[in-house]
Length: 531
Ligand code: MSP
Image 1 (tube, helix red, strand yellow):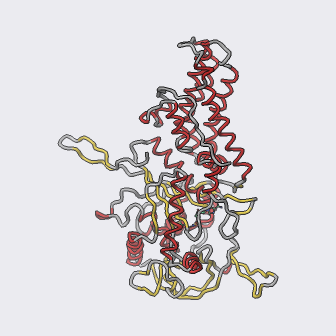
Image 2: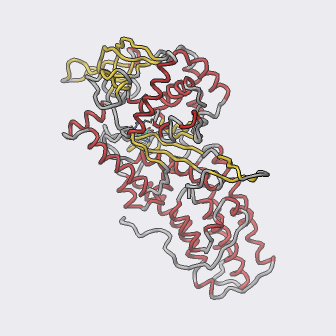
Image 3: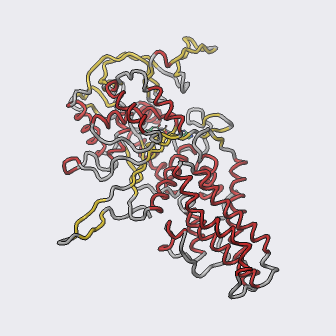
């Protein structure tokens, strides 16, 4: 559905000329394949997929580029591979495949899966490095400070704390923000002149309050950009870090994993662009990231983009985290939820429903609870599955009149109005980056349909009332099915198939005008899953 032709033909007096439409470009972070994916990773993938599908649905002529992938270099991977006794590339091959498999099982329709170990990415990173070097923005300096392998991040003295623990001498030193262990290092590194970009960044963010959402992240960013930015280290000595991209012309140094990783968003759409630097895909329209990696995406990457004279990302959505019994779900704490297991147990539609409905406001951390997923799964089946089953039941079909009067239809007017308004209500929420309420708006229409149906009781009312109920409820199911496609593409597809809505009549404009075909009763919308 997301793969459209990039070229549209436009007629000119003498020949066909090609007009290139820039794809709508969305990314997830590229994931560390040091361990198998957990539910937090699935959340980033599903969130991006919802926006990608929504944009494809609304603008069927505009292609969508949707990039995800794995971030394979760095000390964290080097260490994990060593622990398993495997060469890093071989180690990454297996786990990278798990992320790809998860995306497939979750109906995440990416268009490009990038791995930073790809040759094309080496070329891209080397190109960026050389450009920045040519501009005098890279210099060799001595770096002393703290490094966390878990976070793959440098910290200054003010960002760490020494904690005394019983039985541990000397005291452990950790990052104040993440609690991850840090180690002191003093080494010769290549530095990037980040400090030169503070004013330009501040100007950019101050002029566009929606460039980073939710708002609190934007406010924080603007506040940190009031103070000077320090230059950052962008390499590690090869003696410490061998698994990475060698610094061009200096193989004793390896490119810092974050510098390498952030450039993947450019590599994935063909950077360095052929034909004298013209890109068909940049800038990225929306980047989905977790709240722990905001600085990398809102300060470091944009500074590099400014240096390269490339436009900045249009919007960054920094989501909150999933917790498990109120504790951050993470590989190192060992309290993660296996997304494959969740899909097996509840089916992908219910898992996507829970992620989007509970996590779709993005502001506060939310808890993954088995009891709550079960509750949401039941709710979805009761509201959507039940409505379809009730209205297509033989009890109504067998007694329905071929036509009915305006007065028979009257009780259903609020339902038909709510159905007609649904696409624009949903768009308003999506424009405000509020997936949870967009989804809730669809559920509200379906709830209203269930209520109207119960009130009208067409299985025992007149054949005309049965007709009015049937037409009105099917219309609300048709519109809801179209609107549900970005959120739960699988069940939405099954529903629209069952209603006989042709694939050509499933786009956004059909939310207003469209028709159903031969309705099939008794289709199982939700799979019988292992509960
Ligand atoms: N490799 C870097 C990203 C580089 S992007 C150029 C990275 N990888 S990660 O695997 O550690 O995390 C990937 C994403 O998953 C991040 O956005 C992170 O916030 C998100 N999550 C990790 N744990 C999470 C939860 N418990 N809940 C929600 N998202 C979580 O960082």
